[in-house]
Structures are given as C-alpha cells and as structure tokens.
Image (tube, rainbow, N blue to C red; front, top):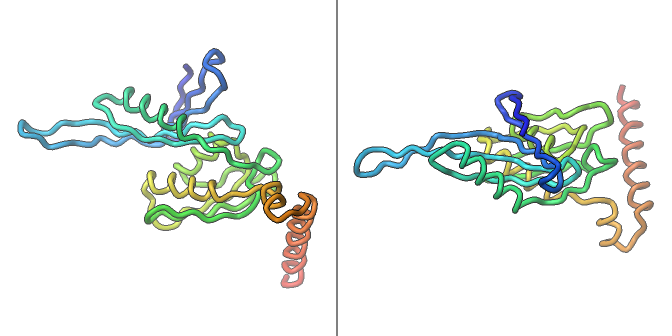
Length: 195
C-alpha cells in the first residue's frame, strides 16, 4: 500500500486485487486513557473516511490499544456504513445544503468548474474520498473533527438529484433542471442590476 502525508492526514489507496479501488483518509487520531486500579491504560481512537471517488463515501471511528489496529477497525466500519451521494456532472453537488450534528453545523454550496475544494480539514477529506472536485463549504459552530464529519454526512444525506425530485413530483427531469438554470440566470441578472 502506498502511503503519503498531506496536511496531517494520511491517504491510502487499495490495490486492484481487493475489489473496487477505495480511497482511505485518516482524519485524526486521539490518545484516550482509562483509569483503572493499577493506574491508567492508554488506547488510541481513530477517525477514518473511505470513498470510491465516484459518489460513495463512509466514515468510521474505533478504538484500540495500537494505532494500526484502531485504523483498521475504523476503516472496516467506514466500509460498512458507506452511502451514495448524487453528483452533478461527477464533480460537484446538485444544490446548496445545510447539515447539523450536535454543535457542528456545515453549509455546502455548489461551485462552478475550476473552483476546487474550498473546505476545512475534516470536510476536505470527505470531499476528496467522495470524488467532488468543486465545492465551497463552511463549518459553523464546533470545530471538533467528529462533529464536522457527522454534520457533513448529515448534509450529504439530504442531497437530492433532479431525477429523484422529478420522480417525487411526477415531472420530467428536464423541467426540474430548466427551472434551476432559469433561477440561476435570474440571480445573475439581479447581481448585474445592483452593480
């Protein structure tokens, strides 16, 4: 397995023989202790994000006495909890969305091509594993990595594709998309009028 360090986070890509290629991002490791009769016992807690780079992503956290074992357990949990997120043109999200978990609140906004990933550390790991190339995200409230990752997943679970909305409203996908494009054009016209 190839390992590299990027901004305090680790990235590992699985070999071809293990099924679909998954991107694993280590978001954080904490040393935790348990006080027992003879003193303190130390363990390590790992937070991991796993994705296929094509719209599927999951996260997991686990504890163990050794760091590699904690990472392995968290990775397995993340693979079991993977969700599918609809992507627009395979590079960004379909619409702006808000997510909340505990004190962590995040806002995700769609972005034009070439914007890149504008997001803080834990959220960046989620977007890279998911395969998003253009997004603007803002974390409000707690900066705890666990809260930020959970809030990001809460936002992604609220994401709806035009196909899903069209099926629910008994309309054609073209009607939904044309309305979205018209609204974006109106917003641009309003901006020009104010300038």
